[in-house]
Length: 491
Ligand code: LFR
Image (cartoon, rainbow, N blue to C red; front, top):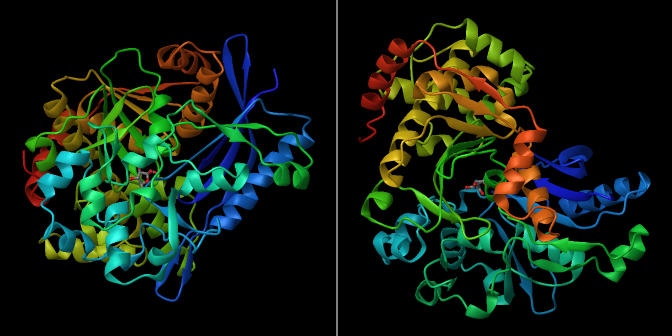
């Protein structure tokens, strides 16, 4: 069996995973791992898209050196960001990073013209200040020259696929995250495009996960000395791939995809577009095989990653395991933050933003590194309980426990605290959720698995799943009461 490759690009690193099947079990081997460092130029924060393309080629070379010719490859990445292609077929400018500040105020300004209920009603997508719709609106307001030159809009994996194959295609799961795609009508929304004065010709009829997206173009094959390997469209939004990989047995299940972001929700077979969903700011992102992800973004381990970076700049270098140890030693439930407060979105200066948040909400601010990490992790676990309860309310299902997937599950204390906070078991695994979901869709496309449920069964049989039973129920319930009052989360 020759194997297939998943390229999974995260906000801080990317990887190429070789997947093989052995007696019905999935085996994965990491071929290549590389940093994904955003680049600040003047006031703007960009992705280094050409470097990412270079690293994908390095991954292909590493497979070749192992004697592997993959039967197909697929790419997934974070959502919402894009590149514009000019009339000559070339990328016009480096894509912006969704954490760039150019979108500040853009959401408020567009919503003053187009009511939120209209946008939500047409897309079912949650309001995040960095959604593609607001990025494009910010560029428009700034008279960005790219808008005049553009002839196609490609999301990050679309763009990398285009570089590899020479064919421009949008892909469905990522298309939905733009907040310009109408899942009910199954097309880019003409009304919203008109409101933003965006040409419909920029947007192609999206490929679905599992569709063939061409083969490596001749120049790439020549450069790398490899044959024209097929490229498969997968659930190219990494969260879409992560949810494919949730090893659930029940049709109605709750998940938390835990990485830089924490994405929590459930899988549904049609978008839940109503007033409550809009009020709670839940989203309905497109998934594989007719599914939607009714979920909510939670700021996630980003806050911890940023603290770690800040302390590193100050000369204190910690591993994540060391940080978790410090948190364990600090006093419990001293102070809380609302992880999704807008103050925590942009990079830089995270520890002092946490201190300021606590001060301005009348709490004693955490000062030691251990106290700060404890405050972040407890607040995340408590926010998970809130979002899980809202997911139950919206979907009408009571969940018996929570599936956690993604790199964040290596933080076993967070998994335990999550179980404590929600008062239900957490089933953690697999850690490489997105990459494994990416592989699964390619195998389904090849007919190796008959459907997503057979793939999920194989994932369950192939990777260790750790169960965390809830503990210290009383203390966590009390803490939750204080947390919701302090953060003013409505019930
Ligand atoms: C997770 C993720 C989230 C999306 C955020 C920004 O990696 O894809 O789903 O909201 O990144 O694109």
